[in-house]
Length: 271
Image (cartoon, rainbow, N blue to C red):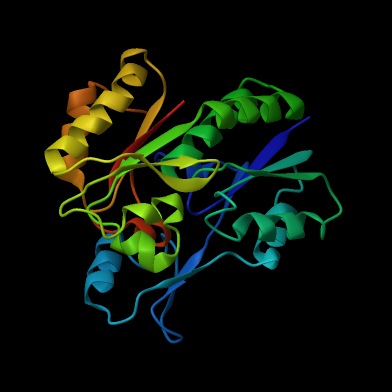
């Protein structure tokens, strides 16, 4: 029995993984008004996107892929016995529902899983699945590994401002931090797929120290780490150095997730 995997463009992956014949990535899109729609991580470089984000009078809206786009991905994998779909958190996007609808439109086994994560978190979960695939594991073993990775996956990230999460409507329970004291720099996390405050700090240095304190035990234990950032390479380099771990990969967050967290965001995921 052979297994293929489908994911969406909010899953960060190291170089080379997207070239695998047993993987399909279905892209989301974002728009700066009705005349300016772009495919996530395809149509604009990250640098161009963030320049536009800073200069455009319109805040971008994001859109999940259509069910048809997922159907096309499933049908292109007919050489494989089973298809496992790993999507961005259902609480952040309608992508999961699109993938699920599409699964009911094809005459083959397709199982859709909400990773309850995004970007580097989803990427680590996907890499765990491929590890089992490459070792010859069957579909049930792949699913069990994904279920275990979902339970273990943590994502912690820092933002320069809560403005973008507020504008995008993805602020979740971090809403209560709005309008608080000057220069509050929270460390945020994903809990059950929703953005929630993890630790409230004041100032960039304390925010960095909090991330190091929270992620240090995982790094010291040799757990799988992955990093991501939005135009925040200096901060991310400082974090990697402090943790003493290069991580399995470093991702430049694309336009869909980047428009929610904003420039200056950076963080780490670990299993």
